Length: 249
Image 1 (cartoon, rainbow, N blue to C red):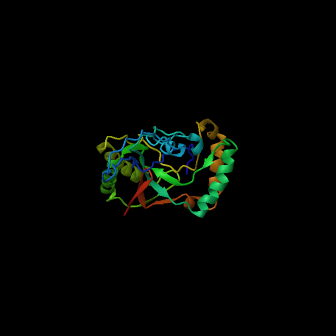
Image 2 (image 1 turned 90 degrees about the vertical axis):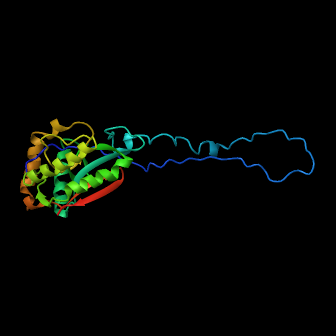
């Protein structure tokens, strides 16, 4: 494994796009009065504060509060009907992998204390893009059609073996992106699993001695070559809070 700068991916959550509407309609009383009566003066009753404040902000999108996401900021602003979408290969971390990470992260934090361990691990096949809600199912079906002929492969923490197969996967994902007029993946990508993230650019602190220290830990870790092998068995698409899986043969 050759060490590489840690990178972060913007993520975004999404809510169901159903919009609540409320209304009321007055209904006249039935029947007729037996004798004429003088109309009573109309009187408007005050609306309780609990009702007045019941629907505040329902027409606005969710407020972006970076404090709730460790200081991370959306790559693009939230807009009703837009779903942040990302295509990737998931990695289910084994115990040995997590043991190695428990050694790597504290060492890296001596150089960049604000580093935060990733909650889940993956190898990206696309950038984060925006899909309209009605595009999601056609987009996923197009991905499934493109992925149908691909076989699973073993890759390293930073992909060296298996790199050609991942380029082929990205090529097919890019074709789907182009069909939907979305941004394709990076040119000459370096496929890798991110282990930690932080707010701001910390590449200068991580380069040099820090990476040498981390590489030493990896080299000295028992069976590190096998620990760092990833069996890519499926491609997954996350759109908002929805997940779609495409098995690799």
